[in-house]
Image (cartoon, rainbow, N blue to C red; front, side, top):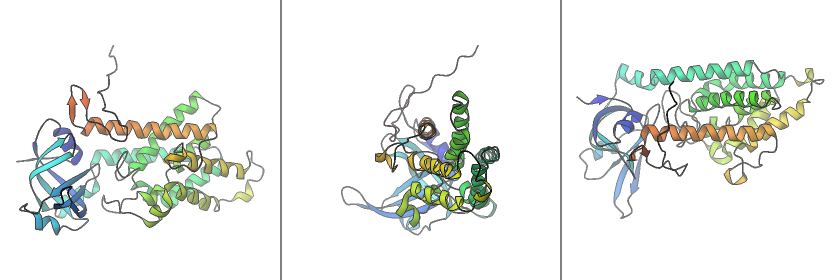
Length: 339
C-alpha cells in the first residue's frame, strides 16, 4: 500500500528517485496548454495546505478525459510514483485518483495539525505585539485592522510562489518579522519600535486582496483589485481608510503629531520593497523604513532557502537544486557546535 503524505513530503522523499505514495490534493485549475512542438496537453494544478503540484496530462493518457472533467475545488486522493526532476520539479507517473469523501475531506481541508498550531501561535504573537504598542494611535490602528480583517488575514498567503506561499503564510511571515524587529530594536534603541512593529503589520496588508486564499480551501483566486492596484497601493489605501476611523480629536497634544505618525507609517508601506525597480514608488528614507526593508528581505530569503532544502533535488553532495528567486544552489548549512 502506498504511504500517505503531503506534497512537501513528496518533494523530500522524491529527491533520490521514484517513490510510491498517496497524497490528498485540491484542484486549483485545469488548463489547456501546448508544448514547444505544438502538442496539446492538460496542466492540472493541484495544491494542499503547504505546497503545489502540477500534473501534465497528454491526450493518449488513460485518464485524460477524467482529468479534463475535474472541477476547480475538487478534493482528491492522488496515488502514483513521484520524484523531483532537476529541471521540471516534482513529477508523477502511473498515477490515478479518486474523490475524497466525508471525514477525510474535512480533515484535509483543515490542514495539518502542526501547521495550524504554528499559525495559531504566530497570530497570538501578532495580537500581543499590537496590544503592547505604546503609541495609542498605532495601537488603535492595529487593533482596528485585526478586528475588521483578521479572518481574511489568517487565510492569506505572503506570495503566490516564492515564500510563505500557502494559506496563512502571511501570518507566519509577519510574526517572524516581528521577532526580527524586536531584536533589531533591542540592538538599536534609537529606532521607533512602535512604528517599526506597525510597519511590519501593515507592510503587506494589501496582499489580503492580492494573495487571499478562499474560505474552506487552498485555492488563491486572482482578484481584480489586486491586479489593478498591487498590494503596496492597496496597503496605503487601507491604512488611510482605517486611520479615518480613529478618534484623533482626543490626541491633539500627543508627540509626535498624529499626521506625522500617519505619514511615516505610509512611507514604510510604500518603500518596503527597497527600490523603484522592485515595485516601491519611493525608496526607504528613514531608519525604520530601511530596517523594515531588510527584515522583510531577510525573512523572505531564509524561507526560500528552507523550501529549497526541504523540496529541492540533490545535485551533489550536500548541494541542492537552484532556488530560482535567489539564483543560487543552496549548500547544506553547518550545524552548531555541540559542547
